[in-house]
Length: 383
Image (cartoon, rainbow, N blue to C red; front, side, top):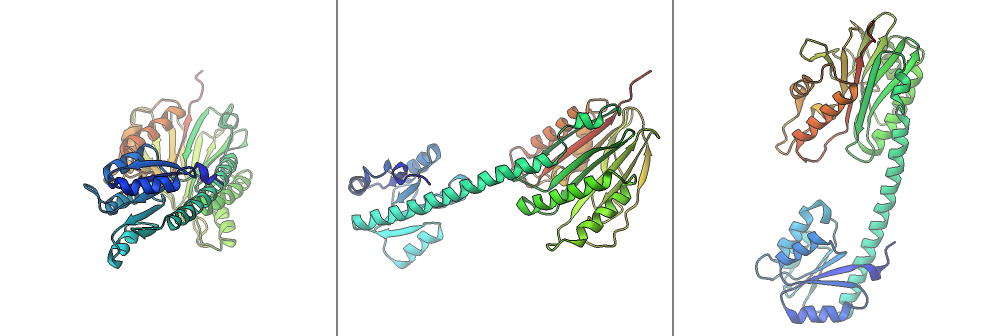
């Protein structure tokens, strides 16, 4: 936990007398900064966030209430402790101070010993909260490493000598998430590719994702029909699912000996196909419900001819439902437009093109869902 002597306090007051009293009382115990009005206080916090703000209310320009409100409106300063020090002693003034987000309120004239005690209490609480957050962040980083380790590590090895080029990117909205993909070499001539999206976000979704991947991987090694894989997956997830979670999934099996690809979907949206000389198109709509919800889940398989140059693009709804600041969705039409120039390019370029186009569309807006894109391109050697 942070040494309190390393804490920095920002004193905000337009009266030099008050500043002198507080500086005299607190120097030697903490690091101190001073701002003479609300505007200067906000600039100081933006430049170097303190551990505590001692804030006057009645100041020229922006008053203390507004300073606190603006601090609470910013994610980076939402948890910054604020103690009001004001000559306003009416109950309604104190109430307003707490309503705008103040952690404490002390009226002037104040006793120095009381100020020091309250300052120390607020700083100890912040140090403890910061330590807890750091521990949680560390655990989440480890959880993310474990989760990413569950996913296929070497796609090139899985696709070696198959004439298939496969690449995938996954970007959780939080440290951990519920999106998943699988690329499994089931036999010399059979490759299983799947992409799924677990309900929810965070740790619960990550745990359910780990279970779904493990079951999927086991089933895909022995079952040659993607619809049967998803039906069996649904049965396994439904049997032990106390929280009622589910996963949508699109599953493809490339039969290279027969020159065909079979696809089945469990509540997942369509995938996109790029073929030489044709505009990108959506294909393989799901016939079943998301896996894990109900024991009865009829899922059907669709089989397509596998032609040289075909690229199959699977994606989670973090792509199609990505939102910009105006809360407009990226949508499947934009996805197809982004793919229009990708026919014939390596799978990695196709995936990067989609992710870059989504990022350009959202233009810095906060990511609302996990983003996963997988491209599988069939490029048999000529001759």
